[in-house]
Image (cartoon, rainbow over all chains, first blue to last red; front, side, top):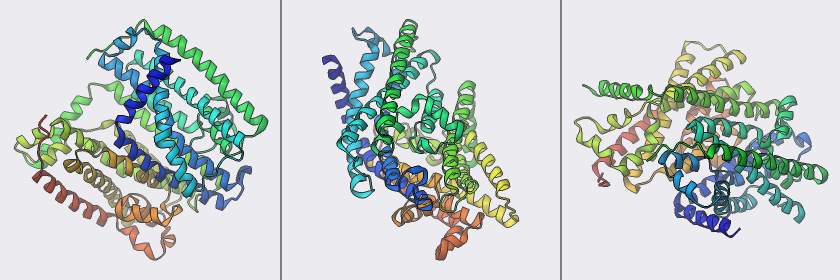
Amino acid sequence: MKTFWAFARQNFHATAVYRLDFWLRVASTPILMYGMRWLWVTLYTQRPGAFGVSMQQMVTYAVLSIAIENLFYTGPLYYIARQVKSGAIDSDLLRPLDFHFHMLARSTGEMFFRIIVIALPAMLVGYFLLDLQLPATLQTGFMFVVALLLGYLVNFHLDFILGTISTVTLDIHSIDWAFQATSRFFSGRFVPLWLFPGALGILANILPFRSIFSTPLSIYAGVLKEDAMLQALGFQLLWLMLLLMLSRWLWGRVQMRIVSQGG
Amino acid sequence: MNGFQLYFRLIQISLLGHMQYRANFIAGVLGLVFWNVINLGLIGVLVTQFASLNNWTLWELVFLYCLWILGHSLYSLFFSHTRQLEDYLIEGTFDQFLLRPASPLIQFLGREFQYTKIADLLIGVTGITLAYAQLGLHWDVWKWGFFMIAVISGATIVWAMDLLIACSAFWTGRSRGTFIIVSPFYGLVHQYPVDIFGNAFRIIVTSIIPVAFMNYYPSLFLLDKLDRAGSAWWLSYMSPIVALMLMGIVFMVWQLALKQYTSSGS
């Protein structure tokens, strides 16, 4: 655990060095939040209470979604690709440290940095200016944090698996595009999953992506409560276990045959 | 060799370079198509469930989205490296342009040809064609002419905006930050009709970052929605004027920038 936090802290500071870009990202996030707020206010003015959700709940969902989206850009995919391309992956593999564990520590450090620098300020702006509501109860707030953490871990492992695959295919951009687009659609990041009709809705409920945005946001906005909430958390946990095992297994197989491209 | 010949020769060289990686090209095209289909799918889900978005129907929104893509694709096919100007300046690559006996602007613009963006062009044309049929539009020659001008103006506006921002790197050394700030404006105007947003936003995307002229304003005229613009109906015809004005500003700023340019020395 000590090693974990050492790496997490190190990457926290490494990220903090590039402060300007981050502050600008902080400044740009409210613009998107503002846009999403107006989009949903417009739609819910047309059809108040659509799908059993109030305008306040929907605006909260959408604004919060933008505030937290930056937490999910911390993945190992580009790190692995960069290391393989430059040849520096050698030194990562030489370390007396489990690679998967190392990646998780790095990524977690960066996530905490992004929570402090981007998500929290964005939530404050949302709260004071853009109708973002506080969670109904303290317990709801706590469950949101748990679900967000699980969502982060699910996203991390999806990303790790992609990174592992990229060491074999040596092309990450097209893999990443496909992944980002699919996740964008099925995670409930822009359009909540209860709006998905028929087969699309069923598919969205089976795929792991809903763990990332839909579950934490729905809990926060009070759309998922009690049994449904516990079920969603269980679903996240289940996918997390599956992906964790898949990650370990895949990396074990790939590790031996990594072809470093050299400097 | 005049400016144009030089430009196309440079593009040709870049294209030959890219052609060596055919698999990348196919993957790139598929990626772009997939990305846009997903985006349109999300808009589709929204509009099917809510019937319309502030009285914009599904196919009108597709039209709006694709009019942006079409203008933007012309820009990104030829000039998508505009945003990397800061790297040219930092790495000193820009100095090469100054040493050769040709216009630095043309050398910079002809540096790259991003042919995967052909996908954007395809999506734009397909989307507009489908929307045109679905909406039962019947344009006369003048309206078609206006449409063409709107697309070219759109390409010019986004090119000029990006080059203006990129030029700020001549003074500050960095332009990436400003791109981070403007990109949510680009994204929102691209996907949604500007009239769903508040006044502050509308004023910004009409005057300071005038990207609403890429799709929203010309669409009002092209889709016979002028009535919703009220007293500001004339803005629908202003895209070419805005494009010309921005172009003038860019050339002036570029000259100023060159005059005070000092190499990074690396």
